Image 1 (spheres, rainbow, N blue to C red):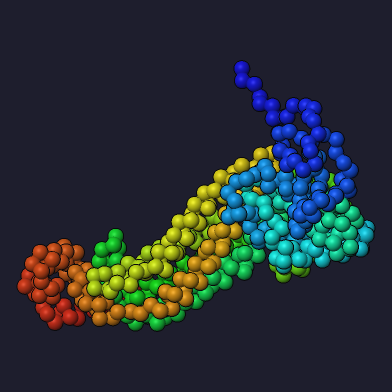
Image 2 (tube, rainbow, N blue to C red):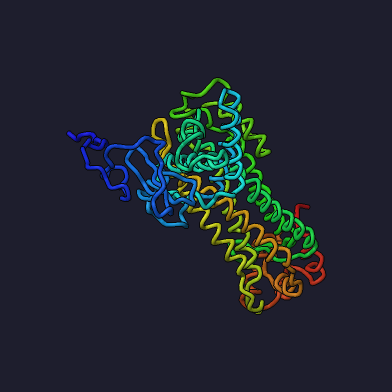
Length: 490
């Protein structure tokens, strides 16, 4: 019979590491007797300070606000380098959250001096002024705990500095007891995820799509009177106007915007106040609601506390839903970009490569791939906690940014400059054998089909072939085959 795996490290005694040594992380050797947590001391060369975590002492650069736990994470998760760091929108979202939490905690008795210092430091994080102090990569613990502690340490040390204290001393502002008060990584990280996603959607994605929608709509109106031959199965079909063709693109982008907006109410629900497993242990009654209200006031977005914190921690269906809407958007933009590059293709269309279309289709492909990763991550919520959080938000933010930016680039560098080559359009339409469809109501499908096949075989026109076969007169052909009369129901 198979045995369950035990994932617990065996206790062991180790010798105390030298003060200057870099101590391996979890599962490796740990330092011996620990100094008190407030015993941060400066190195003799004054380039780093010594701080302590539960595993021992570590060197922390003097010019950084983060502390021992952040350094420990950089040692344990050397995956991907700087390009794989936690997205800055997540860090800024944490700044907003920590400020809101400090303000609410002050209402519940936190020393106003400490609360105000935390709020000032958190504001700097939210404004992007301290981005260089967040070195951790996405590929860490699946709850995002190390990033939460990175934020706590940075805000704590910056607040200490504001109050004239010593970096690393954890006095008078402690990263856990004060900055993380009434919080857990398990509820703060998903809260930051939702704040970041909502902000990116409103600041980048929706404006980009709206810009594209307006430009396509303008082209649809501009091309309303230009009749062209349609294409189905990439072959000639019956006529439509170029404006009608573009109206399909307009509707696709409109629906894309609507789908994304429809996903947002679940994104506006915040997990803050759920703490470790969703019960709200170590918070106060009303804390969750007040934090959500503060975040809403700070961002101008309609955030509310999640009605069920167990769902908010254990599942991220809201992000999968949003990613799904972006995936559908990617499908739409792939189709639109492909159509436009094919409509402008050769022969004799010149040698202007459709680079904007190519960029858009590559973006669409990337977003589709991102959605696969988000889907896998969302399906892996085990019991009370989903542990794919950093990967999921990385991909959601990546998709939102790419789609928003690509929509703007495609609009400004392609769509607004599109011109109809009416001479070519008219030639192709008038030579198309599919105009024979207009004869169906008058002479029947079989005779109309014979006209088209014979004209194709002999390389002649529909009109000449129809008259030669004796199915109608030249005058009847001119009366019945009018492309402008083939654009809608009678």
